[in-house]
Amino acid sequence: MSKLLWIPVAVVLLALPLYLDASWLKAGQYMMIGAVGAIGLTLLSGQAGQLSLAHGFFLLVGATSYSVLSGTDDDLVGLGLNPLLALIGAVAISALAGVAFAPVAGRVRGIYLGVASLALVFLGLYLGQAAGSLTGGTSTGRAPATFELFGFSFSNEGTLIVAGVPLRGTERLWYLFLILLALSYWLAKGAVGTRIGRSWRAVRDNEAAATAMGVDVRRTKAGVFAVSSAYAGLAGVMIVLWFDILKPDENEFGTYGINTSIAFLAMAIIGGLGSIPGAVAGAVVVYGLPQLLTLYSTDLGWFTGSVTPVLVSSFVYGAAIVLVVLFEPGGLAAIGRRIKELRS
Amino acid sequence: MLVLDRVTLRFGGLVALDEVSFTVTPGSLHALIGPNGAGKSSCFNVISGLYRPTSGAVRLGEQNLLELRPHRLAGLGIGRAFQNTALSTHSTVLDNVLLGRHTLTRGGFIACSLRWTRREEKRHAARAREICDFLGIGAAVDQPLGSLPYGVTKKVDIARALAVEPNLLLLDEPAAGLNTEETAELAATIGQIRTDLGIAILLVEHDMDLVMGIADQVTVLDFGRVIADGTPGDVQTDPDVIKAYLGATT
Figure 1 (spheres, chains in turn green, blue):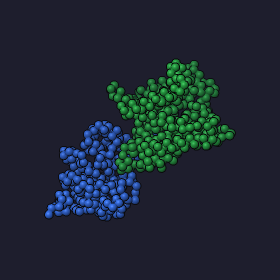
Figure 2 (cartoon, helix red, strand yellow):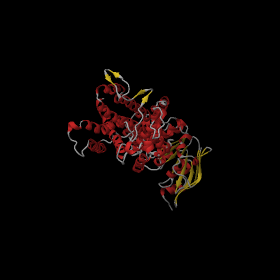
Figure 3 (cartoon, helix red, strand yellow):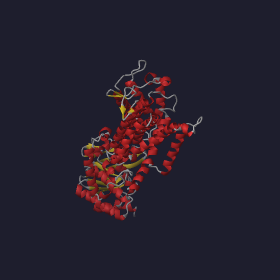
Figure 4 (cartoon, helix red, strand yellow):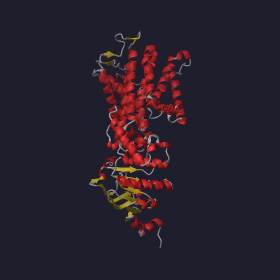
């Protein structure tokens, strides 16, 4: 995207909380969570060619780490750190968890790696339930510490009025998420265009050639897993702030389950594997659709009994993956490039 | 100086290389030839660290290459081009060539994503463009590789190997898949690399015309053994070589 085009995009995104009500802002925040996670996965699976279905697990690692590091509950383990430090710590712990998976990632490839990584989701399911002193357990969960930045609280505390609109917790969280997404995007862009990004693509396209050019394939794979997990961990922190609760899943389908791992993969594929703007667009489709359908559910009147917005949007993005694979393997990113070429 | 000292490579009962010894002297264009299945590619893969020989030694100067993990070779100044142009087809020519600068640059995710390496990147990109200009593909530098003809991608592969700033360049059947005209152009390019850049080249090839025209030294392999080693003139008249290439004449 050209640099000038960013200005109106930024202005709109910054002004939205002044016009939209909280439920719409919540929907937008959810898409931003998806975007941060999807950027991480598109680096791993798209740029470096390592299929992973473990994203849900790393989300849980980040979510739990933040809750534990910042937690002040008496009956649970909590270090009571400053929330910003807790956020940074949670991202770092998630990255380490990614590195810990490297011995497996270095040995298996392709679909086998995908299946091996899926095992982590089940590990997370077990740990989430077993380590109740960290996660709060499945029945009650645990409330995360409210995010604070240099004394400014991202909650309804105090009054802050901009242009006649009171900025409460939801509006404040919107700006926090916007900053985190912008930072994630900018960092990923920088990495992809330079030395580290080239080594990822070399490992993806030909390991023998990568080796001959001096790329340590094992180390590169471990590194890209760390980066991707760090992104997932950040998305995990965002998700506990969004729900305002950390609640481990009761079965393999849930906030940190298989369905989440697949949803992130869907974002990366629909957006075009390896494309960072594509990952954001994919997140808007995959995480935006259920949110919008829920907001409109009463107006639409489609949803009765077992037909839920989540179910309908699963079908829609499932179909979108099939269409992408069949007609445009480059995903939304390739469609975007083509529109750009037509205009110039 | 690259020295192979009695290198033997066995795959189970099959002897792919049988006590192969030869020396590539600095600045020379050394060709490794032989009929199909003679062990040329095996020998090449031993040198580049993809195969570990059963016995024998491979040395570059004082350094025993067999002690190192294969990705370390680029750092020692060994550049390698591939038979099937193992490049990233979705990336641009420049991006592909810049991969060759990997060992000459530093920076992981944090340094790269925070743009700390930006100036270094620019400097190396300029050098990569220079290398592309030298090989006559300067005009294609910013194009995606997938859109280019095969002859050009071959040169991109060589450009990437040269981007390592090697003092030994390994070329694996560079003429494979090229027509006569492209082969002649390639021969000129290889000769130019040797004379202008003064680096040693080890060329694996079965196109005899290409080899005999440009090589200083030729090693001939047959059934995994060295059957001749000398100047192109010596080798061409060697009865064993003629037999290996044309079949036994009695």
